[in-house]
Length: 273
Image (cartoon, helix red, strand yellow):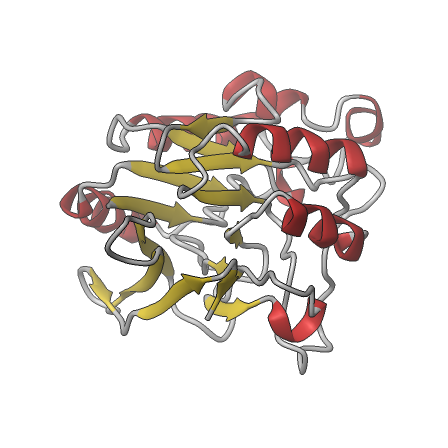
C-alpha cells in the first residue's frame, strides 16, 4: 500500500495565509509515501510568489515529490519572457525538470507539462510527451499502478460544457491505454472530482481513473471549498485486485482539513470501475 498526497492550485500570491499551517499539519498527519503537486504554484509567476511556493514545498514531508507547472506559472505581463522563456522562473525556483518521474515495483509516476506559451489558459499535449511518459511508467512491475500527472484535465464529465480538455487528449488517451495508465491526476478547475475514462473514450479493454484536486489554499475558490486529495494505492497481488481510494480532505472553515467520503475503484482485466 502507498499513500499519495495530491495538491493543486496553491496560487501563492493569492493564498489564504490562515490555511497554510493547517494544510501542512494535515499532510504531516497523513504520513504520505509520495506527493504530487499538479500545477499553478503561483498566481502571476512573480519571483516573490515562486519563493513563497519553494519555501512551502521545503516544509512538506521529505518523500518523493512530483511537481508540474500550471498556466499561472507563466508570466501574464512580460510578453518577451512569456514567449522566449515561459517557464524560466518556474525552473529557477521550483525545479528544472519538466518531465519528473518516480518508479519502483509498486508505483510509477510521470509528470507532463501541458502549459503552452501561446495559450493563457488551456493546455496541450503532444506525441513526444506521451511517449516519454509511457517509457517512464513502464519501469514499474506489470502489477504496479501507473500515474500520469498534468495540470489541465485529461477527462471531464460528459455534461461539462464549460471547461476544455487538454488539446490532443484523444490521441494521448489511446497511447496511454496502450501503456496501461491507471490514474490521471490534475487540477486547474479548482474543483475536486473523480471519474472513470470509459464514458468519454470507450477504448476496448481499458479504462482509467481521473482525480482532480481542488485548490488547496487559494482564496480563488469557486463552487468547492479548499481541499486536497489523499489517495491510497493498493497494487495487485496474488490474492487481490489493485485498488485506488480517493479521499478529499476539505477545509472545515475554521481550523483543519477534514476527511470527506472516499471514492474507491478496483481494477479488473485492465479496466477500473
